[in-house]
Image 1 (cartoon, one colour):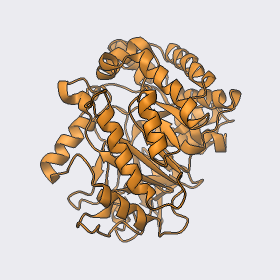
Image 2 (cartoon, helix red, strand yellow):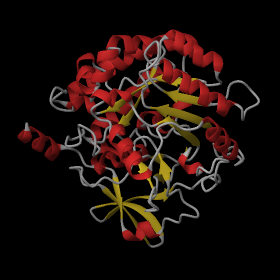
Image 3 (cartoon, helix red, strand yellow):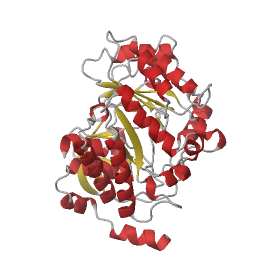
Image 4 (spheres, one colour):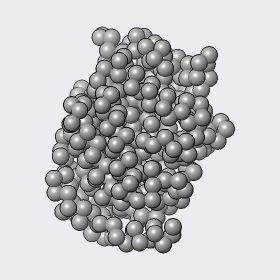
Length: 419
């Protein structure tokens, strides 16, 4: 296997070669996917250019936190065409990361000293440095992507209680570190959320959507009942800021039953529902997501997502996958061709049922079970993105609630604008 991986790396196309081969795809989307795949680090000049008075250098999330101890770090990057790059500095990956450097007064992505593309840091929102009435810093309640407000109301996933969390995920490790070092609570206070959203909405034109996601909460009379109640409480707090019942919003949550989905939809203003399959293969689902497989199962998780279309409507239900984790070993596909074929065939079944599939780029982050793995080639991610985009086009599925403006994390949904 080691020799096979080495040969694979030797035959991978470079960024320039991929851009030339896939000339029908925006080069910015390709660059973004490669930066997410390999991650970034920052030169001293680049770090000095991050101004905490202007740029977003503090953020708290369920997968990673920045600036908790005032070790300010750019939260992320944006390309010249407006595409966001959600990535962080990871120096333990086997792929050498890109380096952000300041050259002749501008910020650039560089690779082995060569200029790749100009970038900017994310600008911080107006609410960033304000406090709630309880004294909580608002940047710890909500995180601002360039055009979306992110709220993570619960920071722990109970699939990790017995060690059955998803193998690519470092949420459990990140929560334990944040709890130990910063006394971070698992659950946000609804009133803090209401006040933070109220303040965020005072900035004209900044936000087009509100997203919530959390770790799975397994307790309740029925599995996920307590998670459902948590979303209802927080969404109702957010909804107090709007005059209409529905407001542009999305939750990324566990696979709720029809009864649970109906409770959320009827009692809140949420518009879009996403539940992540993580990997589109029943056998790999059992090994990559053992907790989800044991307590719900692949077929039932999938069926519940399909059922959500009857409640939220076509174009308002998605599933997310961790693109490339289907090649994780042992047990994953051993060729990229087989992995791509199987993933897109299953994604078409979702599309036929009115569900869009979006992918993020798998990074073997430290703290995850898969931290020592290799992710696939850049060409794989370009083909996966194009394949998912073409399925949405074939089945006339809107990605409006998860597009480049309202999310920015998915190379495939970027193509709905820039292919």
